[in-house]
View (tube, rainbow, N blue to C red):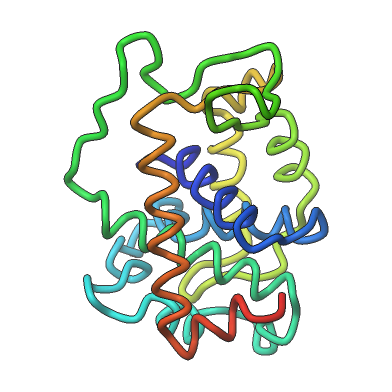
Length: 202
C-alpha cells in the first residue's frame, strides 16, 4: 500500500467516525507519519511499525509527541490515523493488490462523484488543500516534525495528487481493500483501551 492509498484508508476511517473538516488535516498527516522514517538514515521501519499482533493503538499512544497531544481532538485524530496506517500495513504487507491495467494507481478520473456513482470517490483537490494547509502539530518518536513535513511534500508529488484536477473513482480491488483496512483498524481500536481513547471523543 503506497502513501496515497494510506490517505484513502484514513478518509474511510474519518467518514465512518463522522469527524468534521476541522480534523481533516491532522487525519491526513497521521496517515503519512509512520513512513516518515524513510527521510532520515538510521531510523528503520521497525522503529515505527509494531510487531503483528501488538496493540497498535498502545504503540502509537506511547510514541506520540508532544506530551498532552491526546488531550487535543487533533492529536487524537492524528494518532488514530497513524493506527489505521499501521493496521493496513500489517494486513497487506507482502500481498499483491492486482489493480486493472487501465488504472495502475487505483484511481480513475471521473467528472464528479454523486450518490449514483457506483464507486468510492477520492477528492484529490480537497486532499491537496488540506495537506498543504495543515500544520505539523503532532508526531511520533523518533520522528521530527520536519520529517513528517518532508513526507507530506513527497506524497503531494504522487499521482493523482500532483495533478489534483478533480475527483477520482477508486477502482477495484483497491476500494474494497481500503475499506477492509479501515474497518479492521477501527475494530482493533474499539477492542483496545488505548484505541477507545483515540476514537471516543475527538
